[in-house]
Image 1 (cartoon, helix red, strand yellow):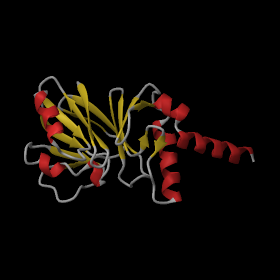
Image 2 (image 1 turned 60 degrees about the vertical axis):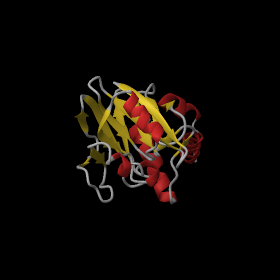
Image 3 (image 1 turned 90 degrees about the horizontal axis):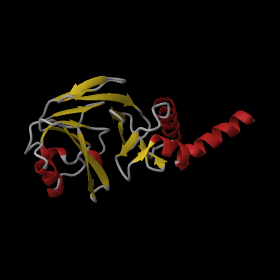
Length: 198
């Protein structure tokens, strides 16, 4: 298995290409389909069989229409995405499945959006906008922020801290680095500690 990274200035979003030795490939969050992404796929002799969506925001899904004109793939996400012309597969919480010989685990981590899902593949974690390098995802209310922080604390931080984190925007990181230096997480821990001490 190999993991490739593609950055698009449209939406400043990351797309991840994961391929096996037979040439079948998975795309995670195709926010924009451009010539560079097509060249990345084709130069490695891959064919896109599956698309995984971390959530439905356009900066992570806008490339699907163009991709569907080139490849025949299935789409996987926590909840349905738009008007689909390809096969759609809903993913439940804490689900383990296999695509093209690649084992995948899911974690539903709401807060940034109600349908946010994190994919874990071996020692790689694809977090979408749930957890980013140095911060957590944006939310539209204090309640959503509280839900996101609780979800991260309960579902992500207990994982192996050597896990490599591939976010929907920004640079890769690791869970250990985020637990030590992520300002949003550190602020939350300080607030919680203060409330407990009172």
